[in-house]
Length: 325
Ligand SMILES: [Zn+2]
Image (cartoon, rainbow, N blue to C red):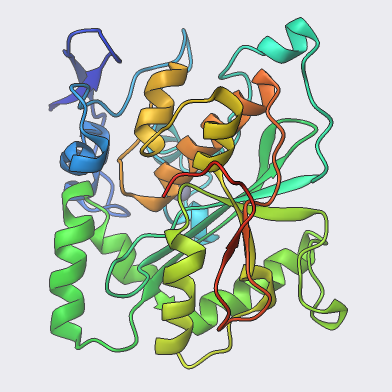
């Protein structure tokens, strides 16, 4: 069965190249294989990111074929790591090393960063959070060194509404089955996330609950200004203190390059970084945001907190005068 992948980027015309699927696996639904290998996202054409390049993948260089992430692996639940067909088809590697050339290291512009680690976060879900992906980016090695990814089960919705919601949101990527197999309530996600932060020595409950050596990086303010506090309300939880400040990458981009970017795809276009995966699949988007971040650090950008509040109910203070509104 020949499937299709869209290759090319930016001003290049769309080129359709066949991708051969070797055999079927009961582990992933045939729909998942079909859609994830197809690797074209209908949601790519959202108005805010309007672009003529409706493309989500291009092999970066020889011998490094792009593969969709195994979404059981990202959640610590892949039981097929020793199955060659499975590991050939799905990526089990988070590294983004070697994808960009280092302008700064060539020109000597690399900045020493105040933060040792950055937590790239890109939530999905409008009514309630459906996906919570976080990549741990090391500012010294300039690579993703660990990750935390969970699909999130809404707490205030009927089963039928959840099914419709997931079909609409994830069905087009072919990952609705893995969502149903793995999604857990937000409260449990946060408990597991805190254990993961602790394991990486980024956070201790008895040390005031703020992050040490790290800050969240998001594309826009919505994730931490609006959505996480809303979800905490719905899930009847206190807003954890580590969510009180963050770095909006679009504000760093604006102040560093002196150019406005409406979103992730426009930053990628301007920096000539080919996007990979399915746009609006949170784990793929966070990996693409990490690529933008890596490129900006290589260009000599300095990452610092752009927004903070002292308490959950307090207004957010924005620390850059020049910012995206
Ligand atoms: Zn796997």
